[in-house]
Image (cartoon, helix red, strand yellow):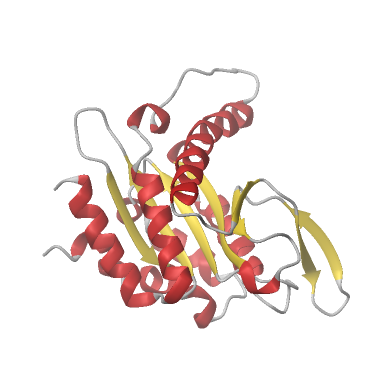
Length: 230
């Protein structure tokens, strides 16, 4: 199956779940991710034997910076009034009652400024397969759930997106991952507004993008969009 055919399936899935400007912006994100070539997905030219976390962070940034570039290009082509920022600070309530706050730095945000409550569109967290495990998945999903929760966030995003690079969601999804998600205080409605994406781009083969809402991933793993072609 070609990259264009995968994108058509993904966009059909998005159209079944989201509407209006959010649907349009998610489709732009799909095109941007699909434009990232394999050399940015499988780049392994950095080694630090003393600090494995630094290696992983560096490798994730190789993909993230190219995604930022491709996303910005498409936004400029479509004359978007939104702004794409990388690792900008967002203030989240750690405790709803005590109003204690913590600053987080999501990998990417699509919005119209920090204070515009009506135009907080998409917030993204990115992981490569080398750094992917149940606890890190739980942490990123938990952060995304905060970003879209109006009780914790004064200007909540409309959608949270978790992007997994080089590792199939269906392959990694197991009881361990499901159990970690159940430990999070997250509503069913919230899981419908969090999208999990898997992206693979290899030399000599088609780019493959697969997506599912967290709700579908939890309740029906077979609903992954690469199954829709059957």
